[in-house]
Every structure is written in C-alpha cells, then in structure tokens.
Amino acid sequence: MLKSVLPYMGEYKKYTKRAAVLMLAGIIFSITPYFFLYQIMVPLVAKEPVDLKFVLVRVLLMALCEILYSMLYVTGLENSHVSAYNTLKNLRISLQGKLEEQPLGNIQDIGTGRIKKVFTDDIDQIELLLAHAIPEGLANIVIPVLVIVLMFVVDVRVGLLTLVPIFIGGFAMSMMMKAGFAKMDAYYKSAAVMNNTIIEYVNGMEVVKVFNKDGESYKKLGDTVRKYRDFTLAWYKTCWPWMAVYTSFIPCIALLILPIGSLMVLSGSLTIGKLLLALCMSFGIGSPFLRALTFAGKIPQLDYKIAELEKLLDHEPLKSQGKAFLGKDMDISFKDVRFSYKDEEVLHGVNLSLKKNTTTALVGESGSGKSTLARLLVHYYDLNSGSISIGGQDITDMSLEALNDRVSFVAQEQFLFNTSLYENVLIGKPNATKEEVMEALKRAQCEEFLQRLPEGVNTNAGDGGKMLSGGERQRISLARAILKNAPIIVLDEATAFMDPENEEKMNKALDEIMKDKTVLVIAHRLSTIKNADKICVMKDGNIISEGTHSELLDKSEEYKKLWEASLSASTWKIKGEA
Ligand SMILES: Nc1ncnc2c1ncn2[C@@H]1O[C@H](COP(=O)(O)OP(=O)(O)O)[C@@H](O)[C@H]1O
Ligand SMILES: [Mg+2]
Image (cartoon, rainbow, N blue to C red; front, side):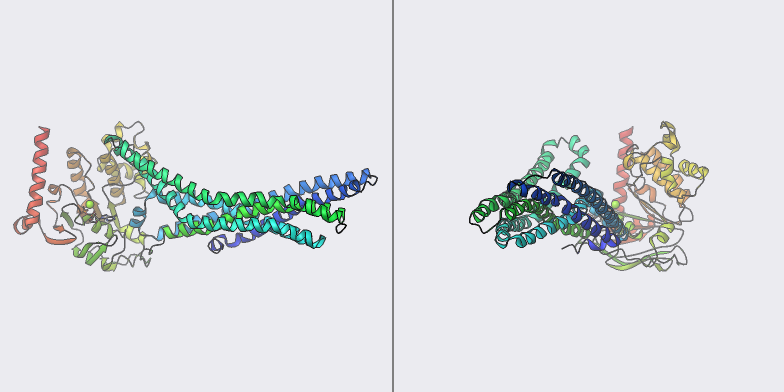
C-alpha cells in the first residue's frame, strides 16, 4: 500500500519505525491507568477496608502513566516529523531533478501555476499523511488488538462480546472506504479543475476587466467552484451513514459488556472482579481503534497523491548526451526537421543552413512555424525526426550548458526575475564588471528609461518584470544578451514591443552586435531584416523560398505579398502619426 512513498523515505524509514514504536509505548501507558483503576475498584466493590496508601500509590502511578504517555507520544511525533519533512524534501528534489530533465517547452506547456501547486501545496498535504497517518495509525491499531487478546484471556465470552461492535464498525468502515474510493478520482479531478480555473481567472484578470467579461468568466469560475462543492458533498453523503455506524458502534463496547456481563455475574459464571477488569479494559479499545480507522482511510490518498505528482512530469526526458561543445565552428544546419507539439505536425521536414558569421532571417505569416524553429535551435523540445547541428555536432549530443554558452536566445516575452535590473542583466555573464553591465545597458538603449526610474539600475523588476513596459523589458533582455556576447544569436521578434523611435536606435545597436556572429532573426517588421545575408520564407511549416531581399522580390510571390503588407503597415503608421 505504501510502495509509492518508500523510495522517497530512504534512510528516514527508520525514523518512522521509531515513531511508531514510541507512539505504541505511549499508548500502552495511556491505557494502563484503567488497570490501576480496576485495582482500586475491586476492594471498593467487595466492601473491603480501603488501604489509603494502596490507593495513593495507584493514583500516583496513574499520573505517571499520563506523563509518560505524553512524553513518548511527543517524541514519537518528533521522529515522525523528521521522517516526513525529509521525505518531502526528497520528493521535491526528485521532482526538481525530473523538472530539469524535461524539455523547457514541456514545462512551459504544463504551466507555472500547476507546477507551483505541485511543489508547494500538494507535497505539503503529504506531510499530514506521513507524519501522522502512518505511525499513529500503526500504533493505534496494535493497542486495541492487544487489549482484545487480553479480553479473551480474562474470559472467552467477554472477548467474543468485544468483537461484535468491532466487526460491525469495521464493516461500516470498509463499506465507506469502498464507496469513497469510487468517488476519489472524480473528487480530486474536480479539485484540480477548480484550482486551474482560479489560477486562470486571476492571471487573466486584466483581460476580464478590460473586456468587461466579469459575468462570463465569473460564471465559469462559479461553475467549477459549485461542481467542487457538489462532488465533496456527494462524497460525504455516501460516507456519512457508514461513518455514523462505526463512530457510534465502536465506542460502545462497555455498553454491551455491562448488561450481559452483569447477567453472567448474577448467574455466578463470572466474578465481579473480572467484569470490572473487562469494563476498564474496554476503554482501551474504542478510541484508539477509531483513530486507527480514520488514519487508515487516509493512507490510500498517499499513493494517489504521489502517483499524481509523478504523472505530471512523466514525459520523455530531453535527449542530451551531456558532452562538451565539440563543434568545429558556428555553422548551423537543420536537416529534415519534423516536429509536433501534440499530435499535429507543425514543421514538415525543414532544411536550413546558417553559415557562420552571417545573418539569416525567417519571415512568414503568423503560425507558419518561425518561433518553433527558433525554439528548436535552443533545444526547448526534442525533434520528431531529423537533426540540428552546430559545427557538425548534433545539439542532442552536447549538454544544455554547452549549448547555452554558445547561443543567446531573445524571445518576444522574456522573463525578468524579481530582483534589481542590474542583476537581471548580470545573468548574461555572472562574472562581468559593473562597467561591462553598464555598457551593455547603454548599447541596448536602456539609459534613457533607467534615468527616469527612482533607483536607476538598482530598481526592482517586479514580479516577472511587471514594473517595466513591454519595450523596456525587451531592452533589458537584449542588454542581457549583449553582455553574454555568445557567438550565436537567436532573436524572435525581440524588438516587437518597442516604439518605432527606439526600435530604430536598437536596430543600429543590434547591427553592431550581430557583426561577426551567426544570427537567426525573426522580425515583425520586414524593413529591419532587408539587409540579411539570407531570408527564408516560411509557410505552413515549410521553407518555401530563400534568397536575398532583391532575389526574393523577383522570385517569391509570398515574399512580395509580405513585403507589401509590411510597407503599407509602416506608411499607415507614418500617416497616423502625422
Ligand atoms: N506551445 C505550443 N503548443 C502547441 N502548439 C503550439 C505551441 N506553440 C505554437 N504552436 C502551434 O504551432 C504552429 C506554429 O507556431 P509558431 O512557431 O509560433 O509560428 P510563428 O512564430 O510563425 O507565428 C501554430 O499552429 C501554433 O498554433
Ligand atoms: Mg512567433
């Protein structure tokens, strides 16, 4: 039952075992007072003279038992928590390992909200199960079993009486678990759907407000929240009757023993002492057994939760031999590259070669596969078939570090960490001097807006860079790439959010940076890539034509169309501004 968690417990298994033993000892001390109570009661019932010292010693012993019980139980909990939190640590580290092996693209597709939830909330819930359900459940089941055996030793008939409520309770419990299991999957799924909807709702708040979609998206959120309620209530509804049966039957062992036992005493087949002993012992069965049952119900959840966690990142790991970069130069070659995100192929056998120290531009209408091709060069995903190589070495042959050292990738939306802008640029080259960082910022046209910020380059970027405008974020990302100074540069609409004035300045700066580099550029304004050494026209996942600007104007209808569209867009803009 606990197979799924054992690998993560590792050496901490012994803490859980120790916890169970300590708690067991603790519980034994929690029920021994009933034995002393019995010893005090017997002479009282027999109307024998009471020895005060005898009673006092028993009372003191009872107090001592209570103290020992607390101490042992707390020490047990301490051990179980050491085990639990270390297991959580192991789980998180193992997930991190899986996360690192995963293609970056897959991680983005799963979504940060979902991954965050797994790493924090879901794993935290496992704590309750590990630290409490297993050791306490174990300890709480052993005691009642022990006491029942003792009951049989006292008197077989009383022992059998004890079993009646236990069997009824146990049956009710198993019925409840069976009914609960059948609904558990749907229940967890509805919880997951609700969580995702809430994350989506909060993330999309801006759109919701601007487009006055409050009503509609609130309805979607409301629906999932209501569905979750319905599932939870349905789950409880099937469980409630059974719960009522076992919670009321199990603790009433004494109620059964008292009348029937009294009859036996009256008929002379049971001594009053034995009846008293049995009554006192019966208190040691009900409540631990109930607790054990409650915990037992939780243990299957542990397997379920761990299986869910593992499933989330259970994709093929990224193919990477992890070797150093061995390519002889920066010539890049895409050979018959086929790729699909899910089922539908989006690149259908692309062949493309980028000569070192030249600039190659990709153009084509939206959705033609330009960004996909760029992402594949930085190994966000593995290919379905074909190959991509740098200097003759396949990119799956080299480690991601080796690849990343050679390539700067600047996408349209680049992530900024919630630290200072300075540190965000420094990521490009962690050992850079302050002068180098400032120079990179200057070349990326950041100076003008940095002056406006209260703390200049030390200003915090905010969560995901939200303190900056889109164009400003892009310029910080470019500064990062400029500082990194990698021999290969991939720019995917890296200046799309800039206003024309800044973009012009930026393009001048880029021209200089791109000198003597191997560059793959995707630009939303064709005028900026007019001078590229080679332009490739993409359509529906294929390269349909390639050449220089003037060659393509002659031979490619598609290119002419794109060029004219881009011209009219810019004249339209100028007219609009005038
Ligand atoms: N993360 C993704 N998951 C699934 N499909 C995607 C993803 N990104 C892009 N696509 C699909 O792949 C195709 C090519 O997209 P893309 O490479 O972004 O085109 P472009 O950059 O030329 O606009 C499109 O049909 C797009 O819908
Ligand atoms: Mg794109």
